[in-house]
Image 1 (cartoon, rainbow, N blue to C red):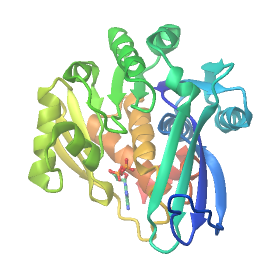
Image 2: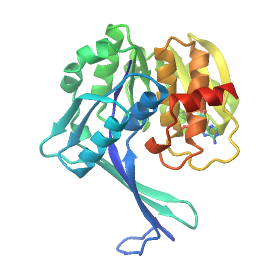
Image 3: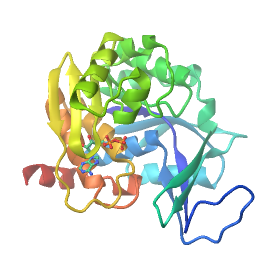
Length: 304
Ligand code: ADP
């Protein structure tokens, strides 16, 4: 089983010829609304990839909260530990995209998920204890993430921290991590090391391991991923995708898939390959959660 602690946010994407400037009102060129939030995307990726999956979060009593429930129920995600806030809204992101340059400007409000506490996480201890893999990120308060990682570890559950968005954290958090999975930019922010070269990425991974993580797994976009730590040092290339449609959520697909493979007892390197396959399939479709592939698609892809 895979348990994910994180956020749901409704993604509201507005397209216009350019981004608005202060005080300006622009006519749009398109609008889309869809389920987002790293935690929710990762739990959907995991559920579709074939694991029994559960979500720990807070949502509001509003229409976006309904959207979250619908999204999870469609894929059979256990929501017995989704708490409903009476006053705070469900998280939402306003995304402005320029149709000319592709530039964007985003405001994310975590809403009710900003109220997730260490106590909320302790209330889910039994759920966490019976999982094989626990996954969390930094979109909800860090105290909640730390408590989840600590509890999971204390029950012998494999822990994955996807440190996104990259925030300044005490190094003590890494001691609770079997895997810390930043992308290239997050790894650079967390370590202060330029990760744009192969040596730089390896240095950043070593730095995360020195800080206490058992393994660092840095994703490098279309290049692949670097695994370094107790599992050894392995560069696992990405799958070549001829027609990339939308790379938003590639990291979420990767983390969800990686978690599922680990939960099945696959070796770390095989699990990275499985995560990369899930991500490679997801970038061939538009959207984040809706673009996550199912197990049949993943297995067919890995056989090709
Ligand atoms: P994020 O989405 O968090 O920025 P990355 O861009 O590093 O994360 O992507 C995560 C993983 O998704 C990569 O390690 C790779 O396996 C896969 N991936 C990302 N972009 C592509 C792509 N264009 N083609 C194939 N695989 C990709």
